[in-house]
Image 1 (cartoon, rainbow, N blue to C red):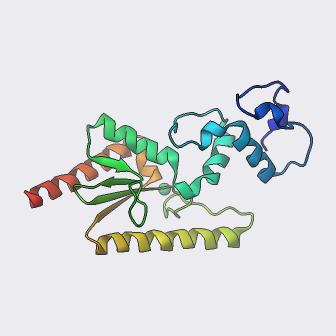
Image 2: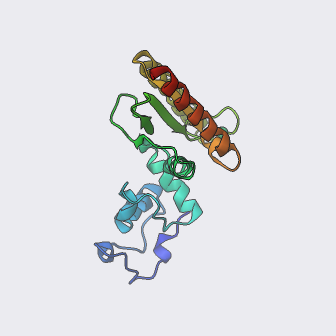
Image 3: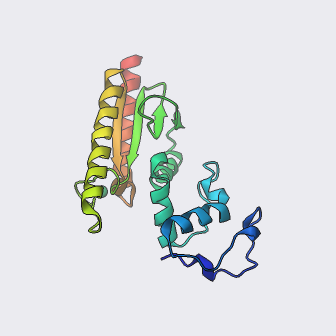
Length: 192
Ligand SMILES: [Zn+2]
């Protein structure tokens, strides 16, 4: 449980935080979440994705709250890899149907980074024990949506690469980079 009410009363974050009641009230997740959003408005700003003032537990809850915008930590891992391996020509959140996390427009390649939990990774995805039927339905519907998005993009002439969160850690990341480089190379040969 997040103990936000243990913060010092004059704890300053700039902005309007000093007007927030920090003590008392029910230990309610929604309440805490909304308080955090007011207390740490910079974390709602996609322009500053590396800012992290949360503990690991808080971060994981916030990641859940922002899941509709994609898993930021997996996206940032890939951004880091693109930069480290000098992969250029990509854009984040390019506005096309299916909302890929990255688009190589010239190469017509769409890349998604799929969080293992939310997208139902067969290798390491888990279903919470509490409220299991809800989560099963939720994750099944996410999987279905992912497939529909991939299919729709391919029908429109895009190549689609979906990368699991677990492939963005450690040495697996190199394989991801090789895969993307190879896909881009095939495109440049066929279009030349
Ligand atoms: Zn996984």
